[in-house]
Length: 221
Image 1: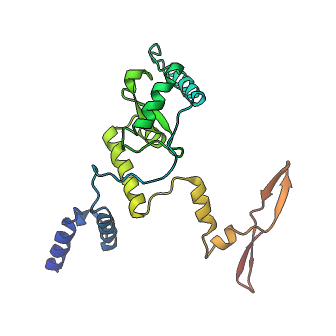
Image 2 (image 1 turned 180 degrees about the vertical axis):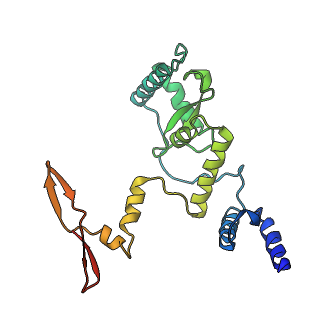
Image 3 (image 1 turned 90 degrees about the horizontal axis):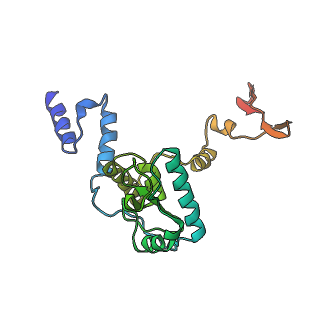
């Protein structure tokens, strides 16, 4: 009995999995599956999705709104705003956004991936020497996190998209669409629309259930 266990421990260890950390062989097998899925993942490799979207072109109106938003944000945090970027800097940043990409994972700015400015030092305001071009997703995700950790997570996300690997669902709209397609068991009842009632000028679905003993069927009405 000891030899088979030693063999399994050595086999999992080759994939950097400590078998003794898991409570069952099925849990080990699950970890093994993910180890194989990410076996050729490299943090410094380019996994940026290829697209043919039009390049993002900064407009004066869009820039004016961003400048005002940055100013309001800094003032709420009591940061120095004397050297903040100005509306007159639009032409400079328009060229910058067209010639460079996101400073975190180098993707280009497109109509589907607009540009923002990421502050280098979060204790300072949006001054010209304290901002770098950054896409909206990276900027929101990074927040005040470590930049290397942010790059690792974003690289993992791009790798999953490239290899069609499963990811945690974070988009509520996608979750709703997936739920509507679930079939079997109680899901057929929970997704059935039988009757509504009008209260306070709003339509409300009635969540009442009835079980028919003869047909062995559960109704929602």
